Length: 492
Ligand SMILES: *[C@@H]1O[C@H](CO)[C@@H](O)[C@H](O)[C@H]1NC(C)=O
Ligand SMILES: *[C@@H]1O[C@H](CO)[C@@H](O)[C@H](O)[C@H]1NC(C)=O
Ligand SMILES: *[C@@H]1O[C@H](CO)[C@@H](O)[C@H](O)[C@H]1NC(C)=O
Image 1 (tube, rainbow, N blue to C red):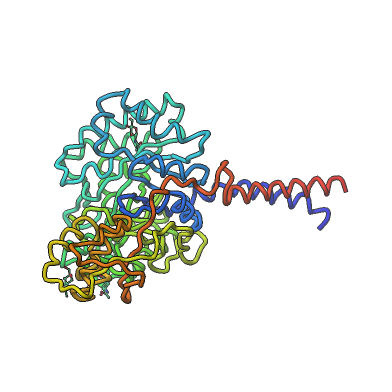
Image 2 (spheres, rainbow, N blue to C red; image 1 turned 180 degrees about the horizontal axis):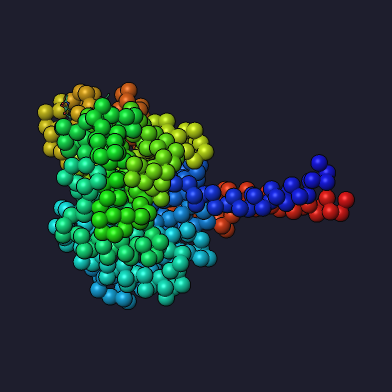
């Protein structure tokens, strides 16, 4: 033992230091959107990710508060060029240079934000955009790539384009997959670009939406537990929508000559309310099934043993400021509620068997606004409409956690939602004398009456400064300890 000690310890030291990249290898990441009226401070959210060992995050823009909080966290970051920024970047090298300088260069390097990807646009080929962003993509990528070269970041930061799965289609089975005709040429250019820089094709896949939009869609085909309606495609049999969709893309890529291009999943997930099939049980089953599938490295029939490069769950947090045009569920995709509380047990496959909740969330005081029981509510409807149009009432509808709480319950919920959104400004609980502030939590069963978050503190500094935090710091301390021990052994 004594003789083997130093060698063993040296081996341990090497192993410990080499183990640092394990964080970069974990395939499961998250999307962090911030369209919320109750934004937990970015530092709290970064701590939440680190407590859950999440090492990859995809952002939809380049919010300075968010990026500052990610400094020194060891988390790998994808920042986003928004669709509205595409035209100017595509049209001007100087605009691209400026974008990279403002949103990338100043954060990488010394300040230590691990920006490894830039998403150029978000689902820019979505059918409903009717082609308005299409022509910007390749020129924008070319310009940004130039900017990265100039900034000496080209080998560190890669460009990707998150695509909606509506970029491709199939008349019947996955092997028939093709890109939409009008996109064929563009997709060929995009695939060539990605292939030459070693970046993956990024696609967003939503079995939930297939089920939601199509009453004939076999429910069990949306999940991962096998299906009584498998899709037979020659020698291949598909038992779930994810595999079928993924291989439709593989086929489409093969047809343009890029059948081996790595694929990453930019968004995938299941909402917890806002539609009958959006509920906690289904969300848990889908996300756990997905994670188990990915971490088993099983791959798909067309790519056996080759799981997606990365998978970013949609989403980390609920965002109750999002448009409900797609449906009420749009505000409820989080594996955590808006304030970082786990909605259901989930093993992310990253080392913790369940999710850990956010800590030190700066809630507003425990106060709620409800309908004054002494007042008759005949004239309430305009007030309620206003409250719901400004704040969030999606939980009140069929398929929501507050459905069925009665008329008075509905009014109180709406009043409170608005009051919290207004940061508990007493005037916002007036409603022509129909509202009343209470210190008793009016939550009923599953229906939670929220207390807002004080996001005036949203620039709170992440709890780990100086680039030494969590695993990093642990390894550093371990290395020091081992070196000290080796020195002791040597001098003994
Ligand atoms: C990104 O950079 C551009 C400059 O090209 C700047 O106008 C924009 O505000 C930056 N984005 C963010 C979110 O700071
Ligand atoms: C939850 O959603 C699943 C999947 O669509 C559905 O089968 C189930 O009935 C729903 N559960 C409840 C309680 O609504
Ligand atoms: C409460 O609001 C929801 C959504 O508008 C509605 O479906 C439900 O019928 C309302 N309940 C009562 C008792 O008015």
